[in-house]
Length: 78
Image 1 (spheres, helix red, strand yellow):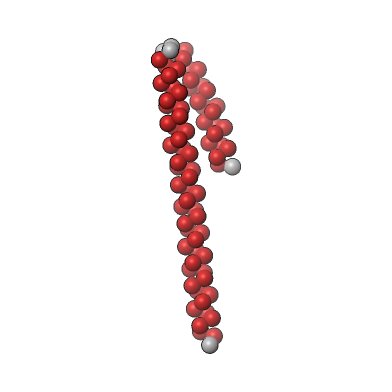
Image 2 (tube, rainbow, N blue to C red; image 1 turned 90 degrees about the horizontal axis):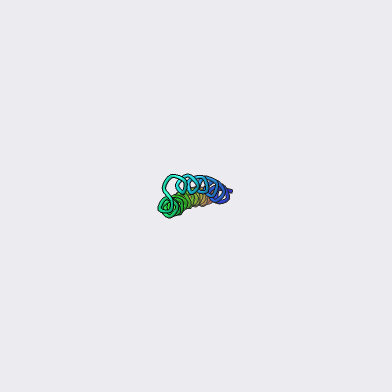
């Protein structure tokens, strides 16, 4: 869902930026705006990726802690 949001919103805002830059400083504005758009979309995509990685790491640590706790409970039963 977030990937679709990044791509969709990036495309809409990128089109607006490209149109404005083309009107403001043709043709150099067009070229520069495409670089700005691509760099911004990559930066946001990496931010989303790191957010997913952080959530995955937190989930893994929680599962490890729960597993460790369940093993210690089993040891106390004996």
